Length: 579
Image (cartoon, rainbow, N blue to C red; front, top):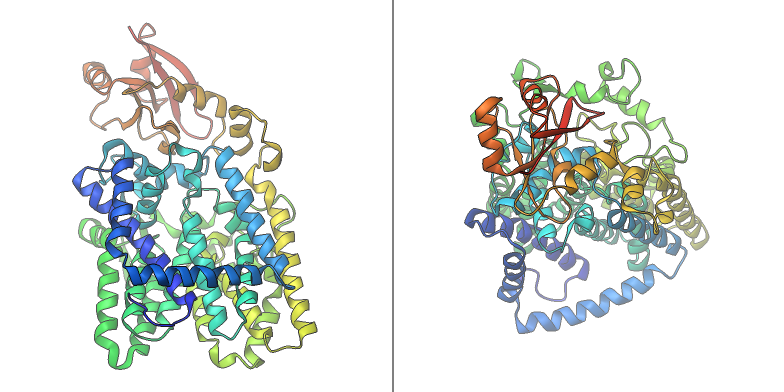
């Protein structure tokens, strides 16, 4: 309805996928506001939305589009670019295996990406999560809302970590659209851009409930819409993609501003529509920033910012993130120098990780000089603005050295290579295609050990036990102890924790049985803590090992059994005996 007529399939796919992601976000917000966040309600909502927008003429268009999409898929696997496509498909397959076989053990996922999802399913509502983890309460959560619907439609959590897959699909379609606009033939555009999935950090992140692949994909879609024809359908797409991008992570405001400015500059006489699109995007994705500004005087709280004379308060500084897993003095380097240090590092086999701090985006990144030269001097240089814009948007962050913060960059590189070499002779073009495929495959093989840094390769875990799989992938440690403590939680019972637990997402059971609750700061010990434990039906509790709660629990061995002390945090875990 928004892009009628014989327009390109790729444009409708981008808009359709963007609408689907925005609809998932809106559905969770609506059901959460009503207190109806359940699996059946989620399914009914999805089917209701589909029925509301379906028209008979649209069904005919879907059949034609499906036939064309099938032809493009076949073309993507026929030609010298087929190796690149195969590398991407195999990478998604490995990520799917990892999500299926391994529990969610990613640090940030357990700290602040998954707790809002678990809390929404536990309460049936969307709310500010009661926890001491500031990121889980203050960060934008548009992607987590999509994760929530994804989880609602699953029987258990075995595939919750694959929640970024719809975004990855949309990102690949967006990259192929940019390549087609630059003159690349359909099969080649699809085949080469599928290699984005084989980028080491993209592949590894697809098996974790982080938001960086989603952020990159939304940046790609936003570039597609703000650089395309300015009409009703693409303005709707721009509003939705920009809004979801702004709500994806706290580093999004600068990319958002660059893309919104591009849309405004290009809109011409359509400036009222462009202004409305930007305003709608701010409403869609700006809630957390407005709340941070009103409550703390800082839209990206808890991260403190210093820009010239302007200082925004916060308990965390950006430089604190730059000293982890980096050389001494790295945090004090200038932006360019940090980027140079990172890009001069090519990790070897087994050195890639889903949250690695330094390193190139895999061997394909070595073709960056070729991409720049081919674009600058090739016949497609006049059509290279969207590619350059995507590269700039990807790097528009103080953490540009950090591979997971710039996952759209390897996508821009692939589009640049495809577009820059499209008019070359068949021999040289084929050499580029095969090189991309070989390097993508090499990167995938080098990064595969990152799924299970503490154990055997992911494909060797088919017959492994739950404990063996957990011990192969955990970044937290003590897999046996945590699994045993969590297993004791029954239906309606609770696993409680205080501010000593760094990753509260670890406490929820994968099958959804039981609850998790944060011990209120005012509940310290004695009768108050006893009453709270009874009211919440607490079966296990993790508290600060040197605090009054732990001392009180240890003083009553007839009621509480000490289980273990946390290895990576200051907590101690106790079981509550049933009478």
